Image 1 (cartoon, rainbow, N blue to C red):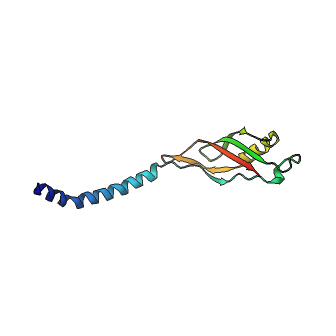
Image 2 (cartoon, rainbow, N blue to C red):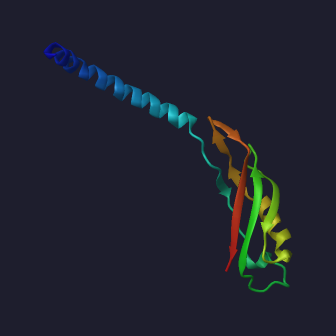
Image 3 (cartoon, helix red, strand yellow):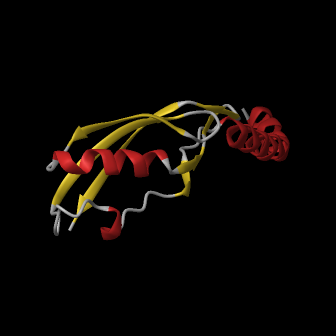
Length: 121
């Protein structure tokens, strides 16, 4: 029993070094393999000047769904929920003008579907 404990105690520093190295290698691998979400380069901006003159002080929430392709461009925007149908075209035009840094999976850019809630106050 004493021999076993001595052998284990002698090998502990070796295991500690291997574990530390393994952790460093694993962390580097995780950084390369980790997925990232898209990030806005040119974010969604809508000003009162952009709204039709018939709409005064809009209050409510809209939800727009679209895809961000491998280049970061917006494709296929669709209004899922709206409080004023007259705003749909303006919002879709503004969403098409946005630009994103594409999402990545395993280090490569991928196409993703994105939902954007828009709150008018």
